[in-house]
Amino acid sequence: MVKILRVLRVLRPLRAINRAKGLKHVVQCVIVAVKTIGNIVLVTLLLVFMFSVIGVQLFKGKFFMCTDLSKMTEDTCQGQFIVYKDGDLNYPIVEERVWERNSFHYDNVAKAMLTLFVVSTFEGWPGILYVSIDSYAEDIGPIHNYRPVVAVFYFIYIIIIAFFMVNIFVGFVIVTFQSEGESAYKNCELDKNQVDYITSQLHYISAVVMTDGFSSLQRNCIEFALNAKPVRRYIPKNPIQYKLWAFVTSPVFEYTIFVMILINTLSLAMKFYRQPELYTQFLDILNVIFTVFFTMEFVFKLGAFRFKVFYYTTKAKPPPRVDDDDFPFN
Image 1: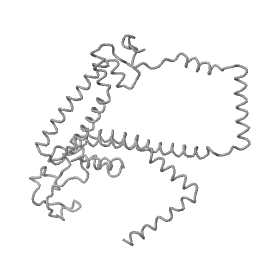
Image 2: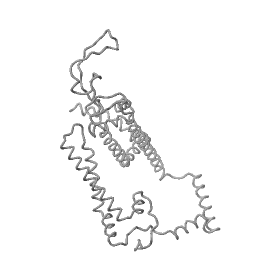
Image 3: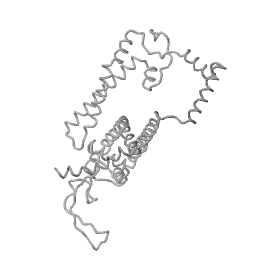
Image 4: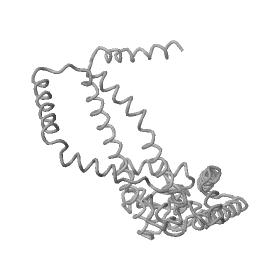
């Protein structure tokens, strides 16, 4: 225990951060970035989880192979076989046949996320790609270049995660450094040149306002503010449609949908290699239940909002103009 505490002495050089202004500023920026980067991390993890679920569906139980490539199943991968060292026929070697699984695989969601993490680091991912292309079926060995189309899965993942999301991380850290750098000068005193420049600009603005009144830009802004109308909320006038609208816009309905989405997400992550048949049937029943539930949600919202308003609502755009009769509370 004492030795472990002694190892902590290596942290003493970190005290120099408080004495070096530049280092302290860097650490502060990193802390601010970590505090506010949570949403980006959550989105990234959600995307990786989605790709992991797809990977389980595509490659579950298909990353097995026999050390003797002439054997395609675990039952036939028995006994011994001869290999030639460095391809030299004069040096035969007798080895045991072994049915083995690739180090990185997609037999469950956790392992799939680890495999995709390795892919995102660009270290050894071509080997995983080639194994995926050669994969044939569950519990059956690989066939050379059997499914080259699965390479699209990796290309899309690399573009979205390795290129797009990682650049968002880097950009966010850069913006954080810039904002922290600007905040460091908020309370600084201005020198004489800065004071003269700001004073001249204030005199110029005052002269424009006093001589010409409002400028054209100011008049346009005032005219826009006077003519602007509040955004109207869609409220159906039909009593039956209004009750349906009140139901689908209620917090209870929204929270229920959110909980069902979470449960559906967990059910997608529950698949694994060699799962029992009864377990598979249970997941299939859950899938049918969720499909029926989300179909009912679609029908209810379509009946409450009508097609055009529902379409623009789901697209996060302002709804189209409709008749005033649909807005009894103008």
